[in-house]
Image 1 (tube, rainbow, N blue to C red):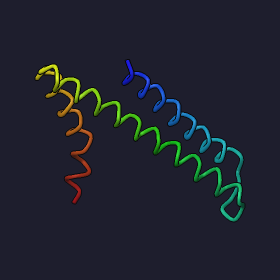
Image 2: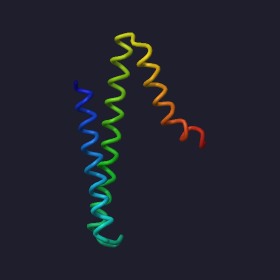
Image 3: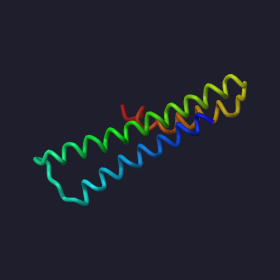
Image 4: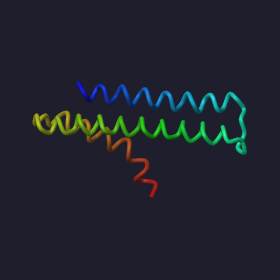
Amino acid sequence: MRSKRLYQWGLGTAASGILLLLVLILSGIAAPNPLFTVLALGGLLFCAAGIVLFAAGWLRDLIRAIRRHDTRQVLLLLLGAALILLPALLRR
């Protein structure tokens, strides 16, 4: 149940970060303006926090599957992680 909360908080923070960036784009504020710096940094930080919360929820699900000896769920979680990370690993 707590991992669902992590996913919900992750979704909320990522959505608020995207909303901040969307407000920044639609307002037309340019780079020398200090408000641009604050909104851009805040939006990016909220998006990064959402990704971290999603990763924490995924890790919690993986640990629970390992403790339950649910090999199918462990393999599916690791396959999902490999598919997400594969393009970044193949680029180098």
